[in-house]
Image (cartoon, rainbow, N blue to C red; front, side):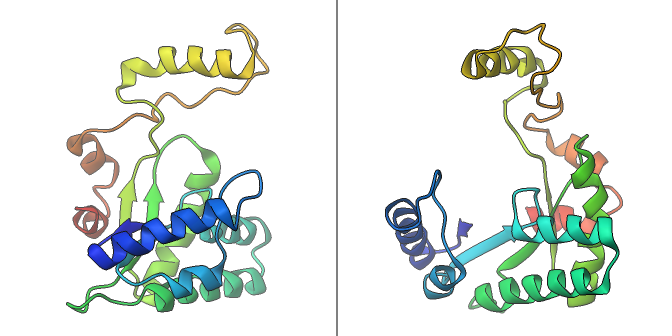
Amino acid sequence: LLAENQQGWANLMRLNSDAYLNGFYHKPRMDAETLEDWGDGLIAINGHLGSSLASLALRYHHSKESSDWDALVEEAKWHAETFGVNADGEPCFFIELQRHSVQDQLDINPHLIKLAQELNLPLVCDNDAHFLRAEDWDAHDTLCCISMNKEKQDQGRFHYPKELYVKSPEEMQKAFEDLPEALENTS
């Protein structure tokens, strides 16, 4: 969620507080009703692997069942209706695409593109970032080992992909050159 204006900022603070105070279960969370109540002035982006759309797209990717596609469409429609359009008539809900070596994300991207086209929803592109520069991967990996009580040479431990750094505009343009509208919407 992004705050588009002062009302959105106030609602974002309220949602954040509510997620910690009322929705907390191992981590902060909020339900659909809360988003419906406090969604004014916000821009929502949904599609990365932690999102509701991604889980439904992944389920559809594996099953190819029309009922799973229908569930994905209904979830996207709910988001589009909940966040609506701003005062200028511009949409406040976007389908997010990422292109890095996480296979599940690569698998669902075509479904997310199809979904956006079918529902006339705008696309945005981004890159999951866990460290600032490409050369920071090893330092980040070391910090992860410390936090997980693992050793660097442990082959069975979790490794973040090396491309999860903040990409330059040129790198993002190259990664999404086939989707200029997603690049434009992102800025």
